[in-house]
Length: 445
Image (cartoon, rainbow, N blue to C red; front, side, top):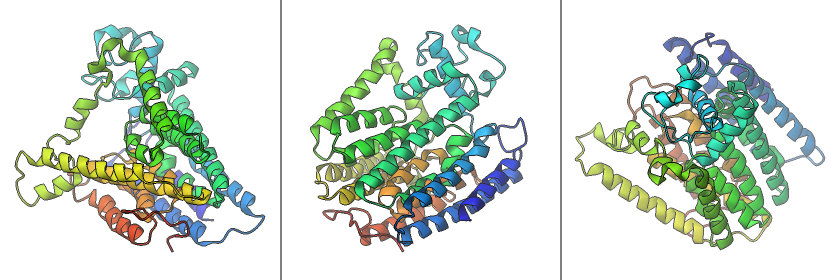
C-alpha cells in the first residue's frame, strides 16, 4: 500500500506539467511538484523502516522481492513515457551522440560552432544547454553510451530507456550481492523505491544511471573476489561521471589487481578521443567549477554559510579546498588500507558502509546544486543501511527549488541533517570510523 501511494504521488507530479514547457510551467506549479515528490519521499522512508525492522519470513522472500520490483516498475512507467522537464541534459546527450556518429570528436566543437551547422535541427538543438559557449563536459564512457543509444533512436525516450536498463542491471547485481552475502533481498527497496531515483532516471534520463549500473557490477564482482573485473567496472563508472572516483578506496583496500584494472580501463577509454589533446578532452569540466561557484566559494555550502557572517579573504577558498582534500585523502587512505571482514555478510556491509561514507563526505564538501547527483548513494544504503546515506539519496529533491537564490540556507535542509545522522550512524557502528569496522548486526530502529 505504501508503494502504491508513491506511484500515485509520482503520477500527480506528472499531472502538473504543462505540455511543451521545459519547466513545470510556473513557480507555483514547481512548488507543488516538489511538495508531492517530498510526500513520496516521506512514504519511501516509512517503507524503508518497515523493510529494515521486519524479520524476513521463511519462504516469502521471493514474493516480497517480486512485489517490491513490481512497484518500482510502476513508479518508473509514468515518468518514462512523459516528456522530460526540469532538466535539459538529455538533449546534450543526444547531441553528443549525433556528433560522434557524424565522425566528429564531441570534445572538439561547441554545439553552436559553424562546423556543426549541418547537424542542427528544430527538435534537439534548441534545447541544448550552454550550446553557445560550452563544449561537452561528459567523460568518454558516457560518450560511448550516447553514441550507442542514439544509434537506435535520437529521441529522449531512447536515452531514458537506456537509463532504466542500466538501473535494472544495477538492481540485478544488488540482489545477487545480497543473496551471496546472505542478507535480505527486500533491502533493495532502499534504492528502487526512491522517488528521486525514479524521477531522475526514468523521467529525465540522467547519465548517472550508467554509473549506477557499473557500480552495481563492481559491487557484485568485488564480493565474489573478482578484483580485476571489479576494477574495470568501477573505472567505467568513473568515466561516466567523475564523482564515483570518491568510492574507489572502499573497493581497493590493498588489492593491486583492482587498481591496475581500474587505471588501465580509464586510460583505454580516453584513447579514442585523444586527437583533440589532453587539454581539451576534459571538455567543460574546468569552467564548470567556476560556473557553479567552486572557484570563489559562493557555491560551496560551508563557505556560503561563513560568508553570511563576515567577508571571507581571498585565501579562504584555496585553504578550504586544501583542508577538504587532505581530510578526504586521509579518510580514503584509512579506508583503502583497512582489511575487509571475514564473512560474506560482513564484507558486503563493510563495502557498502565505507563506499557510502566516502561518497557522503565528498558530497558534503563539494555540495552539488543538482538533485540528480545524489540517488546513487542509495546503492550503498542497501548493503549498509546508514541513515545519513539514505537521507542524502533522497532529500536533495528540495534542490529543485531555490527560493532565495543562494547556496546555504536552502541546501542546509539537505546537509545539516545528514551531518547529524552521520554522527548517529558512527556512534551506532553503522558507518566505519577510525579503527572500528561497521557491525553486521546494526540496523537503525
